[in-house]
Image (cartoon, rainbow, N blue to C red; front, side, top):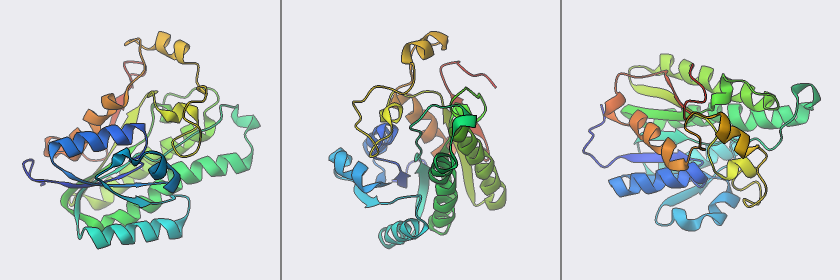
Length: 250
């Protein structure tokens, strides 16, 4: 098991996004070593991951994933934690009106990318290390318009459970599944859009139906991720933490 007092080595895929930047800041403040992997455009836009080594990656491209993790292996022989935050959705539309190209784009980025990254990181993980994938409440709490995204995130949960079973007890795999978080995701995604565009989600309606009466902030998701990285969750693998202000209670 990873020593809670030691300086951990943690790589964050999607670390230039809203949740990623908050997580990087939290881990750096704790004294951990962090490397960020993200789209080149995201890394350029958010250089405030400053002081942290960054590696460009496009999870839709198997060769790019291989190259990025080869570079990571050249920096760290092994690591204690890996967090995959990568994911996006840019349209709300009925599934019957969703064309195959868009469905393939979303499932490739959100599900196939998790598969490729998880495979690539396995040889780099230290004994007792932890992998945290970020899915979504929409993986189970289905809402109209999110068909491709919901399917991809449900797949992330199933895939994570498979990795958990097949790699226990050496490495733990768990999931954080947030509700709506107030980040660029709502405006097309970091590195994929102008982050000041209008939200694709009706935010006031979402606040009204959430018992906590607000959207999640990136910092609300950092704690659950860090918990799953830490020895405090040492007997948890293949589990899902739903973080949604009470909007979904499975």
